[in-house]
Image (cartoon, rainbow, N blue to C red):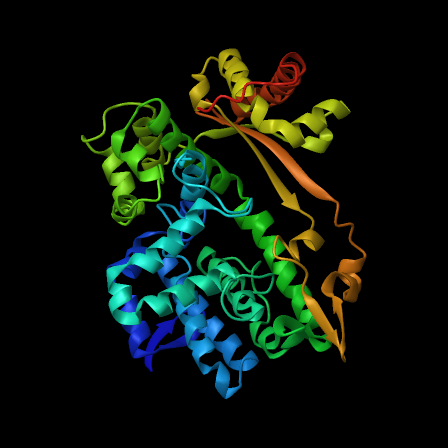
Length: 457
């Protein structure tokens, strides 16, 4: 086993085959895709990448599987879980999760059919890259490639194999909370990982094993879930992070729909073809920014916004309000449930009112779930073992049992390229914007009728 010194986990060991996988162009590409997009504009140390995160997930998945799958018959499963953890992020596009929303929006719906409502295009890209990368085929063979994808999809082996990589208590979350916290220079994501792993256990469910935690680990698990909640509220939903993500998304969407930039159309229109995968692998954060800002790309919305990003001339947040604080119940309901119907009309109304191109006005709705809801996220509840009788974590924890899981914070914000003349001017204009934009939003929703304007950018 070779060693890699990691600032979060210490020494990470890798086998000779894992080392060869790491050295493939498919995996090395992750060195140039940042974990948190442009979060470094507010947290200067947040320059870590999908490369080091993937190594950390492999390390933790190996620790978990070694502890939970300790029969001799499980040795091959442990090896496959480590491979799956190592490769789980190879399908990420430029700026990580920012690309996901774009490719999910622009994929070719005539050529690509999703098998379930929960299936995402970026996940399909990951599976296809693992299955069809020539270097992986030489190193692993087609059968092993299929087993790795089967683990990621939850279709091969026992359920616990997928739980280790993708579940409410998985190695992915365990790594990114500590790693993001470390590189952002904050303490919000810190939890007792050694105690958490030590108390993780297995529950037999019919013929399958399911990831669980012993009763002794409930307080450590509370710490873990709270770390996720605080990282969400303080880092992942930080104002600058929301603005930069929104600017990247808007720039690329306008580059495709208005500027008609050919390479962006090819990059984000997934059609299930091998040609798309070859093109996808050519791009990372650096290549995308450099190409858009170069002479190769004509002046237009996309280039203008990316030039602002590179010069840190960010859009300003000119409006923010909890949706629950809008006065009229019907307005609250329609913003919460039907925001996309009205988004473009809201941006048009605000742009015209303040004298800015509506395409450069970004209305953004986001949600922060209750900490109890975040404890299970979309993967299901964590089981706590009390002797032979399991219970769910939200009921076993006194702290979480007292929290109303239905409570959540939903926000509506507006970003635009505003320039203030000073602090006094900023305060005056923000007060005016707050009052005026709220009225504009209410009028748009009231006047739009049932359909609204659902036209794409």
